[in-house]
Image (cartoon, rainbow, N blue to C red; front, side, top):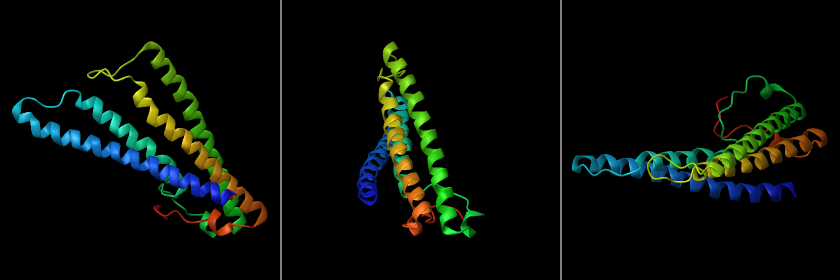
Length: 177
């Protein structure tokens, strides 16, 4: 069951990360177009607003997928030499801490977004609702809570039962070791 949940969540977070990448691509296109149009003195109105929105989407929507694919940078000096069950237990502990941090980010960000929505805050040039900027952060944080909780659960099961130790103690794919 955990494997099916991981597969489903990985597919979902991959799709969300691609949306984030599209946001970054959009920010890059807006930047290039704005620079190209500057000699004509027209430029793009609201370029800063659009770039900020694209960068927020790129950063926050990629985080859950990075958790599930072990793509965050890590430095493993001690854990690589530990017994597999102990390494899995440490992975569970680390993932639980990450889930807690992401949950706090989600709660406090939700409160800040709700306050800005209540006040009707908008961006400086295009008057985009500030909630548009909070949406990728909230979605990324929520998916990150699910991703890290799943990682913690899988690693804890591996540490306690010995099943799935290879997956629970796997080396990061994009990490520094």
